[in-house]
Structures are given as C-alpha cells and as structure tokens.
Image 1 (tube, rainbow, N blue to C red):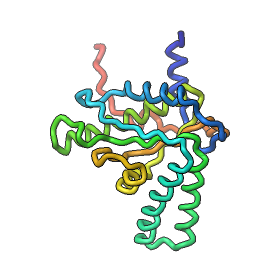
Image 2 (image 1 turned 90 degrees about the horizontal axis):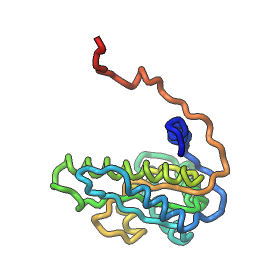
Image 3 (image 1 turned 120 degrees about the vertical axis):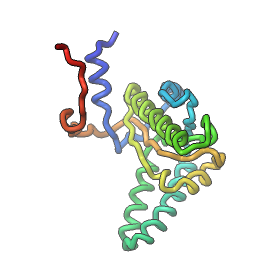
Length: 203
C-alpha cells in the first residue's frame, strides 16, 4: 500500500514529455487511462467530457494538416513571415507524427443542466479536470504526456478532420507515449506568493 508520501511524490513528479519512443501504447493501457480519466469530478456530475483516440497515422496526418492550415491563416493575419510560418507548421506536424498516441479532449456542449454562460464554463472546467486525470493516469502507466491547446484555436478544423458531432467542442489534445527524455525539475512558485489563508485561530 503506497504511503501518503509516495502518493505526493507520484503527483509531484508528473512532467510534460515531448519526445517519445516509437513503441505503440497497448489498447488495454489506453482503455485503463481513459477509464481512470472518467473518475474526474464534474459539475452536477454531468461528465461532459468526450475523448477521440488516435493511433492511426493517416488520421494523425489529416488532423495535423487541418490544424496547421488554420494556424497558417491565423499567423498570416498576424503578419508573421512565410518562412517562420512554415517552420512552425513543420514542427507541429512532426510532433503529431512522432506521438504514438493522440487523444483529443472535447466537451459535449449539450450535456449541461441549463443553457447559461456559467453552466458552459462549468462544463469546460469539468472537461479540463478529466484532462488532468488523463495525464496522471498516463503517468501511472509509465507513459509521458503533453497537453496541447491547438484544437482550441481550430475547433471547426478539428471537428471536420475527425468527423465529430457538432455538439463535440474540441478543447485540448494530448500527445502520449513512452518517454525518451527526462524532463528537468519543475520551477514552482513559492506557496506564500500564491496562497491567501484564513486559518482558524487556536487561541
């Protein structure tokens, strides 16, 4: 039975990993990761998260090309020069290709208790919690993972490339695999800088 110190160490040692071995992630491991991710808390227990699991190279290529096409348009509108745009696109496509497992995390826009801005935000927050749970589950399996925001900037392109229902709103993407790198220790802001306390007085 792991001690509480063991569990804290496990949680604190998760890092973003960007380089992976080419080894495929077994389907049984993928299913275990997804199952654990669904134990995340959610507002009203709506569980609005939806997952798209991709290991097929042709689908990764199609998704990467769709997202980078949108990225090119956005960067051109920002006045970025063509060589920098193509360099960024090539890097993005390479990263997509090298990841043995890609999981796109979506929010089902219809899975809400009421059609209000607050409920939508709660759904987004709930979906994000499932994303963290997903990364921790991957960490438990000895896998590395990296949270990618690209689909948030290209929701229509992502939905079209993956033939998703209109109600599935892409929120994030995760590159997962067996790591070939050891990330550097993470720099953490001091607790005193980020916490305001109102402890009960013992007097």
